[in-house]
Image (tube, rainbow, N blue to C red; front, side, top):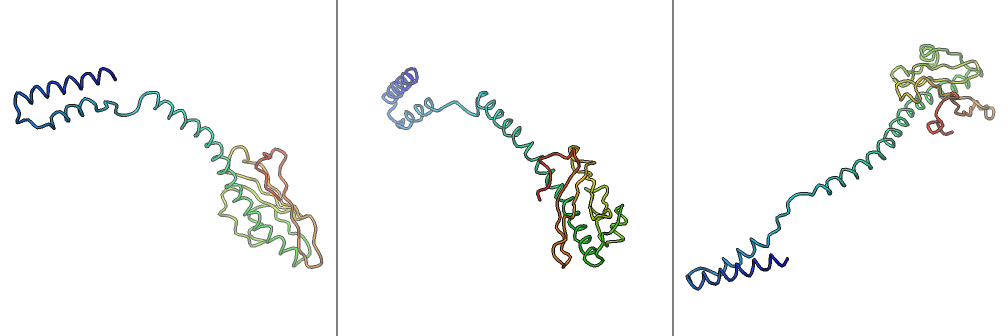
Length: 183
């Protein structure tokens, strides 16, 4: 700061001397020269500032990406759960009408016997209904952690004489705990 002040004073002296030599020069020259000397030459960011910014963005990305991936997997599993809910409604209606459970070992039989249009669901490779009313769906095209594993809906009891059925979620033994449906 001392050198800058010294330059400003020298410039002011020179301008005053020039002004005495040529009084037609305006005083603005002094202010312009002083302003020019006092201007900051710092433009842009330092390397340290850029490295800190990159580190912060990297840390945030490292935290956010696994969370985002988990939400994508859960959203895809919701498609499977919704497809199973449609089949569950059809099985409940069948049980209400016939007082027995349908037996549909393949997707085509579920579609044809129960009239359920689940062919467009790309997250289920196989779905079946056994003689006890248990609906089993094999998960596909979701994530390697859950692909080829089963989600199961089991009827637990028929409530009252009206034919209402209560359902409970179940899954294959190797289905990840944090991705299991909540009852």
